[in-house]
Length: 173
Image 1 (cartoon, rainbow, N blue to C red):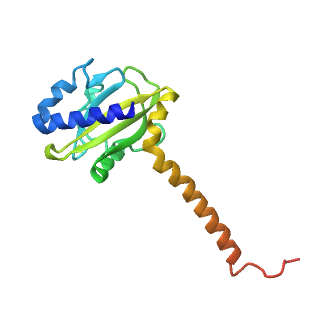
Image 2 (image 1 turned 120 degrees about the horizontal axis):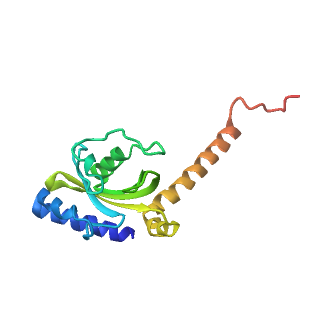
């Protein structure tokens, strides 16, 4: 599923590069390749204004800097940062699916379309644990880095404690 979302966003980016914002008309069509089930394409301008959101059209025309999901992540800012600093990438956050009120985990792949000043996002709501296997390759770097950082901190902490100048040479009785 993850590679399908990336391919969808890359294809949408190519369409925006060739047609500009006129391509948004196609992205708004429910049941199309651009909006099928829980997968849809939405877009931001470079300043963070939502310029396309077919699932939640009432959110268009405004910037949502600082808006947080149920776990406290400023997800709009994170999507913008990812596109601007890395060009593309995955961001996860928690929001209700269209037509629902309870938050679900959502994974979005964002890509900067530099020629048009548009940041395109392909969104996928995740509710089946089996879908996570598709995201594991994208999270592998984080999965390796976090335990390595924890191990390094523990080793440094242990090493520092062993060499601490205030550590008594003789046990205090």
